[in-house]
Amino acid sequence: GTGKWMTQMLEDWAGLPDELADRGGFYESLQPPGDYRYLIGAEVAHVDFGSTPAVDTESHGPDPYSIQISPSPGRGFMVMADDREGMDLSGRALALARSVSFHHAGHDLDELRRLGIRIRNYRDTMQEAFQAGNLPQALKALAYRLFRFTMTSWEDTVRPASIAALQSWLAEALLVAHADLYGTKTKVFKTCVCGHGEAAHWTVKHAASCSCNLYTPREE
Image 1: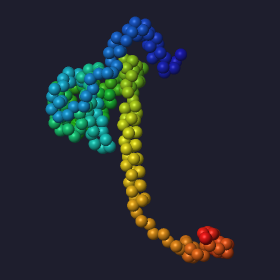
Image 2: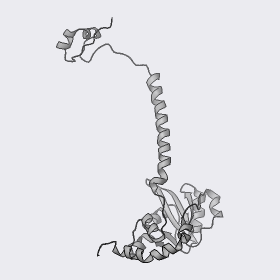
Image 3: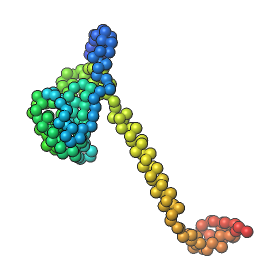
Image 4: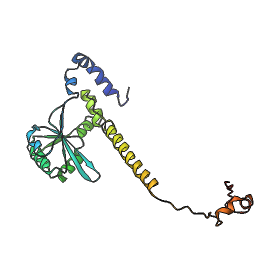
């Protein structure tokens, strides 16, 4: 066949005996739980980022939000962009790295420059996957293809917190609406939009002759 997936299928078939013989082993060692932490300030100085860390950046709108550094499989650390001490220490450590790995380096390098962090040497796994010609360029698909490592999706990561935040916001909005509804006195106007008073609407004759076409029987 000449389908675009034929090369990948043949490689998977050829590598199947090795994967079955592995029985977990290497692939299992990559799976969570691992050492994943949020670092603040001087805590960064106590972590060894190694000589070939992988780095990712996140932004919120036009502003940098955080950087994530992984020295080895199963280890990852997050430092917020507004943590100046943490950023300075991270920048010093990354400046000493022999090489830094990115996935889509064009974006990450720009974000790091905005944070004052310079990188000496780097590699871009997205470009490498493209040049290989037979690998997916999406990070999650590439990690599973090469290492059978299942990364947690963005939706699975943020959905529980998003639902909790939404529920909290709705509960607060309900309290505000309730206080506004029952705490505000409203004036009842006795004149209809047609210009006639309330008493005029008590008769069927009015309903037949007026543009508002309203008839409200008087309560005895």
